[in-house]
Image (cartoon, rainbow, N blue to C red):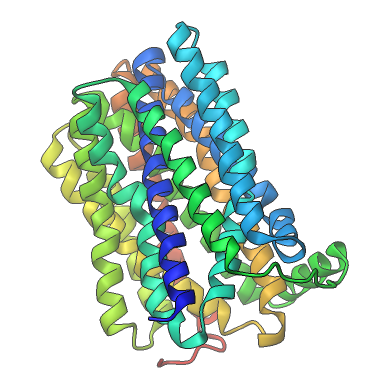
Length: 410
């Protein structure tokens, strides 16, 4: 094992710990806001303010990562993002932690965290050779998924013996670990020289032209946005649905079981891959995802919730893999960077819509039906599942849009 790969492992370990810590805070604040306000809209607002800065600042943060010391940006981003969590902790210790204060702290933390991701990915590229990327990609994926696989069950168990303040303290401690790891790695890597890049607006215009001049590419991007929309609805409303008839410990175990569905399918795809027929598999996986969303909210019992949640997440890697392939093979290789930056921005607008609307709709549905926010969340998830199923069926009627330019084989 060469020295750079050991540096990567150190950096990865810091990212893994930071991801788990961030997941603890996300889970704990979600439970705290729901128990305090009894509103799904409040939980959704916290999630939206934690996500929006990362989305809006992703492109400028990427530019900074190309022009300045990436390890220093990582240290600044992760270190300063602790300020928002410390602010929330102080409010809770004083007994002043209302929804406005929590949203303010989450927003501050997210603004600085936006610096971290592009610099982290670029640093991995700096450290590793092309031959080492395949070995590293699996580890990077595990670190990115840790907040969904490990954090919920850990947070649920900790909340059974303490309160959300313990989770915040643990998360704050993880920031120092990440900063120290980045500082150690930084000592062994010289800072890169600033690179000259084309004007930002010209790059954006070129990317927009590339993804809109061919109807099939833009149609696939819209499908990607719809996938993130329904994923966001599920992500936001699964928590109030489960909390309406259970406790935080059970919620943590349930979220981990559901997220394992995504890990299970990803491992299978990593071994076997997909052998052509991407458009057909895309439609089938999205149709099944819609069916499983409906099943998730049918009854307030934890066993069917876990089963249908696991199955829903198991369909997502197939859909994402097919969408990635179908879009990637339709974009010229010399335009991939400009196009994917804009594709990432557009596709994640689905999350913004889900975080802004799903909680409000669930609260409204609960009041109108008189069944409470839990069953209101189930109703919104079910309707979303039906819409996703209908969209998937409609896609099969537009089969030629997907098949144009598709290579049947890997």
